[in-house]
Length: 278
Image (cartoon, rainbow, N blue to C red; front, side, top):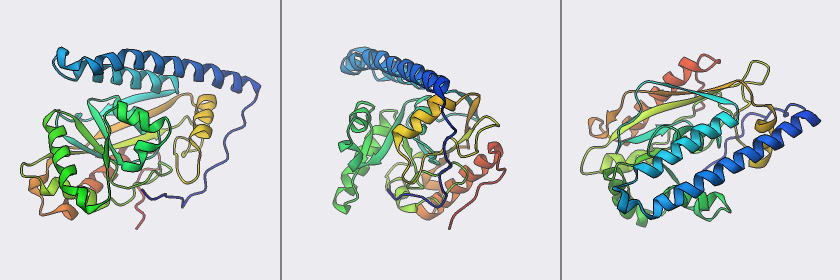
């Protein structure tokens, strides 16, 4: 994954003693909420064959994600129709908050680069959430396409970020067409649904407040959000799903999905119109 750093991160708002206490308390609540969710989720994952599938633990994941967004000060609004089971999602990528945003809607499984599996803590969480790790080696393409087909057949909703990086949340970068090659090559057609995630902070905060990009640290971003995130809104806007087989190839499919995400981004972004960086 490349790193987008064409905008300078704004200086975080000043955090006085009161804000620091509030951030610490919210952080404790967020950790306790996570521990409780894991304590319920893991046993459900271990016994899921006895429960007839994955629905119970995905319900726990949705509840955790929605509660976490609330604790961070974000109200979630869903526009359009969320995807059916066994569909792929393609979305813009603005923040680490996207994990909670998309876990809140269904049986979402993230598709990540293979290196993420080895990241401390994050790698463990990704494996626990059944993330699919993709290698860049061409020799792994056939195996990964088969795994993708199997996961979709199980009803998982595979989520891709075709921009290849996260941004300041004020633009949608061009979608990289190689990420769509697996859909175009599958024997049976796959439903693909474009979705835009738009973070709108409270009026007194900068428009890029929820963005996470460049060399911004995860810890610093989390602390700033815990201290200052109040009255924010997360819009999840779903475009109509399409069949991969209806497009001549991966480039046409990527172009269509990118255009749909930009259009839905513009509907709810204060900027009014997505900026495409060529």
